[in-house]
Image 1 (tube, rainbow, N blue to C red):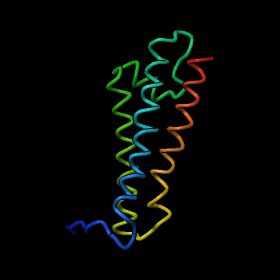
Image 2 (cartoon, rainbow, N blue to C red):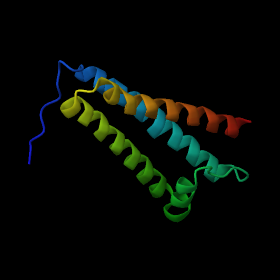
Image 3 (tube, one colour):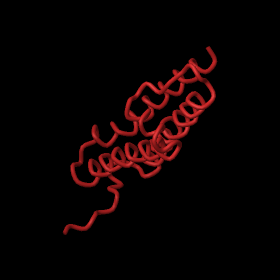
Length: 117
């Protein structure tokens, strides 16, 4: 079994890595989760559009939603770290946090529009 190497500082700055994932966490983890929970609990005529998320929320409640979000987040984080440590692939390093940030921002705004409109 090969040991993990340290994060390659010549590849990317550690502060940059943290900020990328702080944005992803804020948009995807906090914004989307809070607006989704607000909509599904307090707005009776709005239902979750993603069938997997709807089933998770219906079956397990908040825990189901958070578990799916954490699973997606952990998978994207693993891909980003693998790209930096093993593949030396800058595109794949940046792609997961950027995609999570964009998706989270889009659905947060969309959910707020549904909530307010």
